[in-house]
Image (tube, rainbow, N blue to C red; front, side):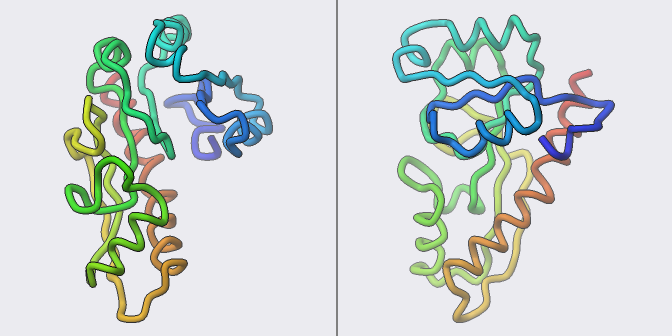
Length: 172
């Protein structure tokens, strides 16, 4: 939202969430961006979310911290126009249940000396869509979960908006 606030390329037109307590909803309100909260029934058993996105003429659906599989009706309506960011270098440390601190702890437990982020297209499986971009950082011996998480978040904030911007320039 911050990155695109004064952009000529794009605007954040809507924030969707399945969690009414999600901090992103407060941020959206602060940026005067409309939001919509949905439940599993609306998301999986109706076309309400798809129809809302189509009415708003959304060019790109950007996921961040979203833990549900995307349903077929949404994938078909926005082919190669739904992206996600994952806090690991896929295909390592991806899949159902691999999110947030779980990913970073798995990296520590595996003794990895490299970690990073992956930006990828979304498909019908968790974290298996085509990779768009990866960024890496070195994991030093003794790095704590907090250090690893912080380093990953720095890469996310640096790269995700730029990749989104580049994709939107290709679509327009």
